[in-house]
Amino acid sequence: MAKTLILHRHSDKTPDGEHISKAGLEKAQAYGNMCYRGKVVNHLFYSPFVRTVETATAMRLDNQAFDAVVMHEPMFGLGSEEAFIVMATAEFKSAVTTGASNLDALSIHKDERYRMFLDEGFQALRAMFAQMGEGELGVGVFHDPLISLIARHLGYSEARSLEEMEAIVFMMNSYGGIKAKPLVD
Image (cartoon, rainbow, N blue to C red; front, side):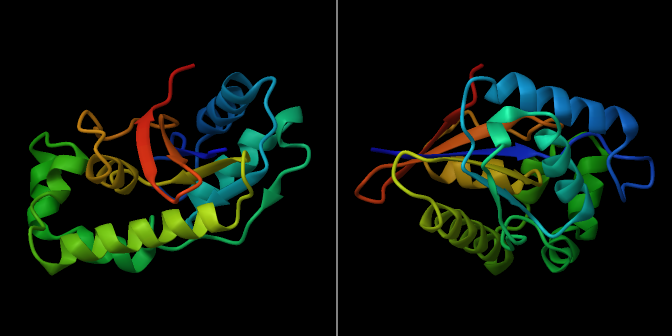
């Protein structure tokens, strides 16, 4: 039986980027109710950034799917202050400013930093799966473009930068193989 992990990008942020906005709070709560109605979410993961914690918390509000959820400690590897400092080079910022998606801008790091992002992301993904039992559902809230980067490397070639609250599904089979696919409601 497979383990399923659905990783969302955080919700809409405030203009200063420090928190999710009131609209973002409402959106996260609505997505939590829409995506997980009738399901049981066993695990909730998030990065150490305030926006991801706020989004994960909002998804749980008045949502029976999360009644028995284990809310884990912050997961590193899919977004940390240190990673974003390394990622947000002048070239990255310039690419985003001129219209590139975060995922496409990240591709400028065709050196050891790119490999570092990928390796840390896979370690975090495997660590989340390791905390889950067979047949369990985990939900995570992290940052773009790291979720999409991992999905592309797992063969989901159509993976693109995620908009706020969009998600990608990762499934691990009983042999430890992982596949990625789009979240289809």
